[in-house]
Image (cartoon, rainbow, N blue to C red; front, side):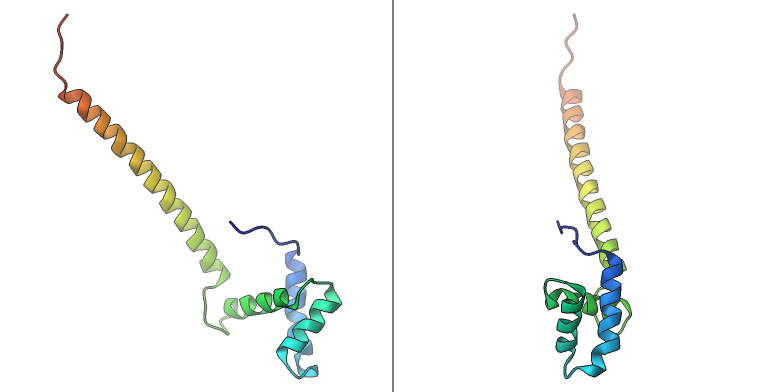
Length: 108
């Protein structure tokens, strides 16, 4: 399970915008990302790179699974796991009751 980010969504959006704005002023995109990370007090430029790549995927500029699709897949996997658990419980209950019906009845 992923741990929550220590950075608010507003900071992420700002960092992504800043990289796009200052990119022409730097020789490489990585240099721009390092500068933005330093200016905003983000621990690692890799964090900014991850945010930029995710924003590019979400915008359709880069191939990959969008954030919306990823959350839907996560939700469906959890639902699938819950349905599998429920199905196992129902199978066990069905076997139990079927065995009860097969037992001979004793009259008292």
